[in-house]
Image (cartoon, rainbow, N blue to C red):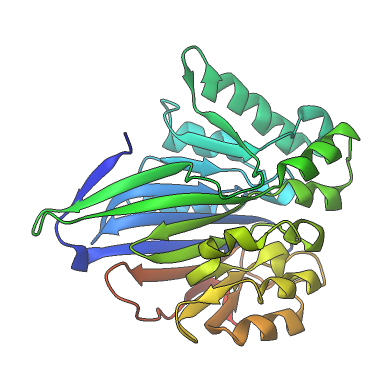
Length: 322
């Protein structure tokens, strides 16, 4: 049975999305379904922190230390993998969260100590005894059923809405081929990257992780229904040149009703023409930046019961760029 939560009224229900990045690398996304100020359900996608800044933990602390219900580790590059064990120890001490990792990834393929440490922690704590909360994700041909859902019921009306998670990538055949050939370079780690859509009340929120051109080809037309009515776009691969190719796949809810965010990586991403491409379908495009602050964070607050376009709230090095 999917978990069920009760809200005072759907007019108070919001989906709050925080995109967090650091001056040169690092990405994590905190998504909270909230009834006013009360957190009902929390999803964290990837983890990164530095010695001086852990903004993901700070966001959760400011919201009453909610339990992490779902953790999605999109792929084991270092900029998505630092601090996973500390984050889950703090906000899921009983190891009850559902944790999703890419199919066919192995410790031997990983190219950094943070990822290896994280995988050891996940296997030790989420894949033991009779409870197996560590799930590997790999899409196959045909439309995948949702892997996880949750139900929210209004106390005032008794009406229920359901949230669904649709995992679109990695493609099983592609990731198996990479694993079989022991691919180790960092660029190819992106081919293992999980990409998913959260569907809620008829609208969708797209989490593009580090999808690149080679994996983008596996977003087949039979899955196009999951790319309709998009409200939020996490621009893939830090707004790289290839990321603009996803614009043609995404179908926002009416023109300019979507918003997009991304994070910096190195000296070249995000790529300015790619941001222009996303602006063609989005009301706002925002990015974390390099800057002097220890982090950047872009907060979006989506009302679940209407389609108003939220204005990005940018903190630290983050800014609206288009």
